[in-house]
Length: 138
Image (cartoon, rainbow, N blue to C red; front, side, top):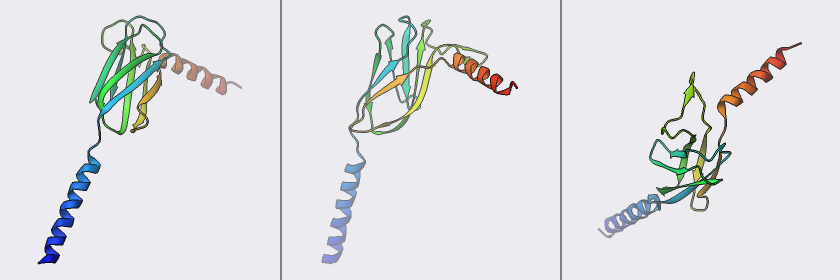
């Protein structure tokens, strides 16, 4: 009988410890956005699959976006400069015409601030095409 009580007590302790280990504090993270081409419009950001999102005016550089209640873990972040204020990433033939960035981040207790540099995708594609053309020339 004592053995069963001991096993049940051990099992209860394991359950309590396991649930405590899985419970993670949710705190804010900060996205510091750089390489913004102008001070017009706003910077929009989402983390995860839309679980966390925020925005800030593109008035000061770098722009800081604070997202609340983010648990530790690995996330994809997506950020773009909504220069014309239409709340959408403008595209031309499927290619973004506004600067944007996407990257994976690892949120931990000690790492809660992330730098994100926006990229001109349209310009990057043009540059890659020019390089490819130059490599093909004899």
